[in-house]
Image (cartoon, rainbow, N blue to C red; front, side, top):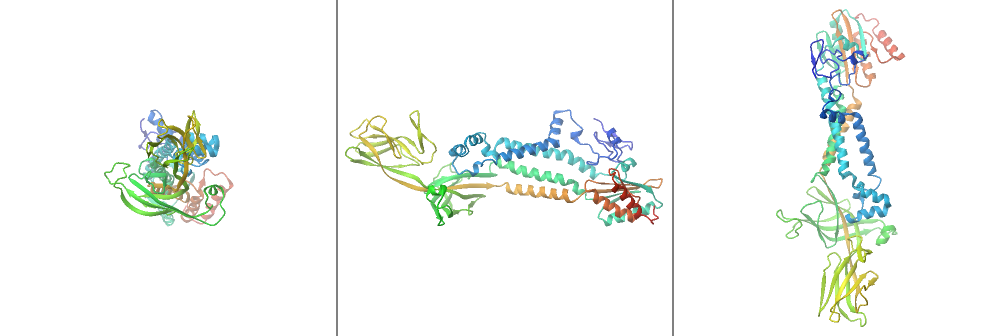
Length: 556
C-alpha cells in the first residue's frame, strides 16, 4: 500500500485521513464531513488500515474496543462466580476433606462447584488465560492508537490549510487592518492563560493540556502492570498461600517454605467467661476466644541437605505465634489461623483372655504412625492388619476411612498366643467389636486414650503486592489526568488577502474552551466564533456576546 501524496507535496502513510503537514482531507469520507474527526488528528490507525494477513486479523481482533469490553465483562462474571461459595483458602479443612466439605455443606451445587474447579477459581489456568487475553487486548489497543496519537501531537504544524481551519468545530472568519498587532494580542492573552504559543510567520498555534490526551493510556499502563502482578502469582517464588496442621510435639516441613521446618511445642487457648454455643460447644470451649497461640521453633535445613531430611536441622528462632502476630522469616509470614482441641493421639489396649480376664500384655497404638506388629513376649504378638483413622463403614467387606484424621479410629487385629498359634482376627472400633472368623478366645480390651491439640497455620508470601500497588497508583493517576484536564488548541492565521481565520478544538469540556475564546476574542478583537455542531439558541447568543464584546474595538 503506497503512501498518499497531498496537494502540498507531503507524503502521508496509507490510511491517513488528514495531511500531517497542512491538514487537507485526504479521503472522500473526510471531504464530505462538516467537522473533521480529531480523535487521532487524522493519523493512520493500523487496525483501521490493514486487514489481510493473519497477523492483521489477530491485531484487529485484540485492538477492538468491543472485544476489550467483552473480555472485561466475561472476566467480571467469572470473578463473581468465584464469590458464590467460599474459595478453598477459607475452608478450614485439610486437602482430602475439601471435596467432602463442599458436598456436605452445599449439597449437589457444592459438589459441582468443587468438581469444576470453581473453588480455586483465581488460580485456575483458564481464569489466568482470560486475564492474559485482557492484558493483550489492553496492550494492543494502546499501541494501535497511542503511538499514532503521540506522533501526530508531537509533529503538529502551526500553519494549516484553509480547509482544515474551516472544518473544525469552532471557527471564526473576519478582516483585520493590523495582522501583526492581532497576532501579538492573541499571543499575549493566551500566554497569560498558561497556553504554550508557537508562531510561524502569520500563523499562530496556542495549546494547553496536551498531556491530558495520554490519560487513558496511562490507565492502560496501570492496568497492564496490575494484571501482570496478578499473573505473576502463578510464577514460583512470587506468591505463596498454603496451610498446614501441626500437632503438639510434632515437627513438620512447612508447605510453601522450601527447606523450613516447624516444631509445635504447645498450644494455648484462653477464653472469655461466656456461654458456649454451636461448634464451640461440641469442642467443649467457649464461643469467644480471648487468645490462642502456639509456641513453636522454626528450623532450616543446611544448604546441602536432601529435601525432607530432618537430621542436622539448624534452629532459626523460637516464637509464639498468635492471631495477627505472625512469625516472619525471609519474606514469609506464618499466621495462626485455626486450632483443634483434643485430637486422639494414642489408644491403649490390653490383650486379655475373655473367659479368665487374664492379661497377656498391653499395646499402645500411635494413631499418627502405628506399628505393623506389637510383640508382647512369651510367644504372644498383635499384628495390625488394617487401620482406618476415620472409620466410615464397610465396602465389599473392607473397612473404609473418610479422612486421614483420627476422628473415629478402627483396627483389624490378628492376635497370636501360645494357645492360639494360628491366630485370631478381631475388628475393633469405638463402641464396636466384630469377630469375622468366629468366636475368639482372646480380645483387645480398650484401656485409655491420650489426646493432643492441633494448630492450623497459614503460610503467605506475596511479592506481587508492590507491583499491584504501583499498577493501582498509575491507574488512578491516569483517571485523574483524563478526568480533570483537557486538551485545548487554538489556531489563528492571517491570509494574504487580510482575512483572519481562527479555529479551536478541545477533546472534551467545550465549555472551558469557549470560556477562553470569549476572553481572547474580547481582548484581541477577534471576529465572533461559531460552533458548527451547535444549532441551539445558545449558539446564536454566544455569537451576539462576541459582537457586543468587540463593539468599539477598531482592530477589525
